[in-house]
Picture 1 (cartoon, rainbow, N blue to C red):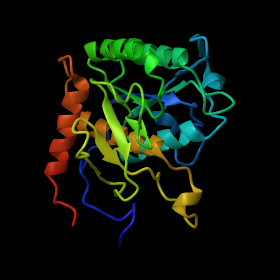
Picture 2 (picture 1 turned 90 degrees about the vertical axis):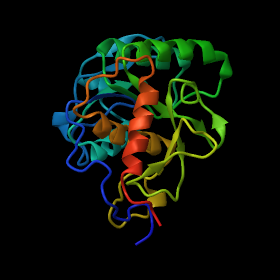
Picture 3 (picture 1 turned 180 degrees about the vertical axis):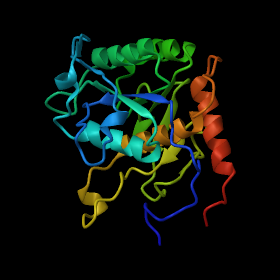
Length: 253
């Protein structure tokens, strides 16, 4: 069977991401959704466009569906991980650099293991401030996983050094990822979330957000049981661990 959901040997047998905490910067989460295990959702925050934090269950409740789908994609790969919603989207899937930077710094202060950022900005004027926020996370051993580009246009912070950038390949199986030849420090993954019975993949949510989420789920499995990286390059160390796992299984034909 071909297609994104064809069965393949697991990359991380018997690992579920237990003990790994992932900050999911998105539109929040709906804990009662069928694809969400509410027990794996920790309290988070909403961050408004001024960078102010708002706490409480209603503040992180997803009203757009995107963050719930992204969280579900992470938990599908790492059902034992803990996801912490950091809501930066309100009425639409749009925010600003101030909110994104505040979200990264809030997650860094919380001392999570991974920051999942399925979005980004193409405005290069923000390069320095995003690089600073990424460096702050790295200094605490936190790996930032983010969209490297959208349709070939580089995104921040995903295209920065020190970030595990993710690109998209519609033909990549959802149970795999690979190193794209032109971006050796990145990973490439499928842009499709789990299938909905009776619904064509193109009618479901899809895109770079889900490639990032799936890499974050795999990352949680790679990090399970490991001591936090104490070096200043956690994203690079995580990339190496994910590539090593990929090389330990048979090559796809």
